[in-house]
Image 1 (cartoon, rainbow, N blue to C red):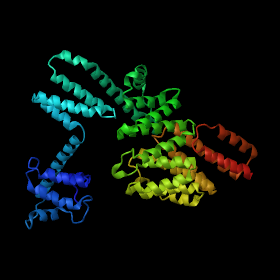
Image 2 (cartoon, one colour):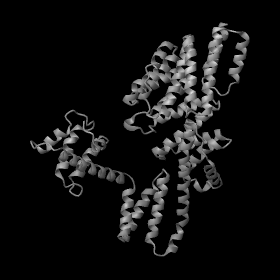
Image 3 (cartoon, rainbow, N blue to C red):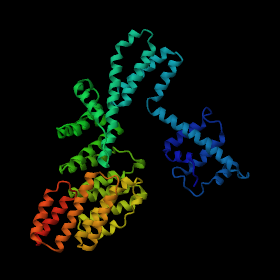
Image 4 (cartoon, rainbow, N blue to C red):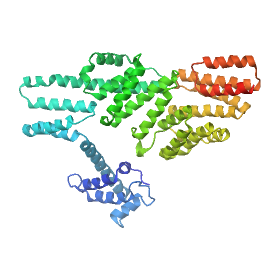
Length: 484
């Protein structure tokens, strides 16, 4: 298989884009080299994989030049020319799929001082913009462009005063949306890893919005972002969570895919923060949000694949809620959407959890040992969460199987793993360490049961607020209570 930049580009082309690109190459304005067109016509026979053994530079040279002596420099130069044309085609596609084309045309008419036609194009462009329901940054940037171009048409500056206040307000809207959107990444990062960010400027922004909210009622995205942030900073956070969900549902169809992704991500972060604080009812809220993301295809992934973090989150919440039928259906419906190189390990990860909840502990343990974490996410930080999940699952399996020595050995290894992690948040580290210590005490109580120690242990578990896996520990306490 040939390694080339142009092949990487061609692989992304749909069948329709392949036809358009051929038309692009046939145009003398773009391409006067007929051999480049012949090279493309040969390459397109291998679309979309471009991985046939017959696809080699030597075979391409023979196709193009017959029995002439092979010269790699000829092929290399043709590939370079085709790559330049493919990049130009991508630029053309990008410009024509949004409003950039119209804006470039208006700017060029302004440069050439063709004012009558420019005025007509501005009015047509403004009519299009006014139909936009998604009032995001691009919408307000396009409105500012209209103001600037209208101003360029006016020689009497007093005429600009009628729309100058609107121009200023649109700039404020762009700033507010951009600030709130930018901080989303920080709140999500805080939820995932050990890091703290400064939100002082954002809080000032929210205070300003609170005092001027009536001015922004025509911007649903801005209002949704505002209420979404109050979920994190207002004492009535649960009220604002419900309000955000209602606003999100009302304006869902008018939002861009990127806006939906941002909102869903922050709603997840809010639910997980509430769960970490002991509000277990938010597990149901979380799984509903995650399943909505899949239902509405709100997250873009290459080739319609599901991201491993999203898959993991849904699976773990199903386990936590003991929704076994939902868990089975989810695995069945979506394991095929895991990228091929990760699918075997993610399948073992998935069925290990399913078998555990079906009391097939030996099978679950066997599947845990089949996982190759290097096949999962590229980032070590992200792989950390999968490794932690399995270490926790292995410990529970060993306890259930009454494998005392192996369980005690695993306790030490698990503690060492948590201690060495540089990115896990301190509160999560404490919760997992508390879980390990309690399981360790459970094991010792099962070996040498003592009524007094058991009562004290039960109180300790009930009073431990920072704990992950507490429901399972309480189940084991109940079993021990009945047995002894």
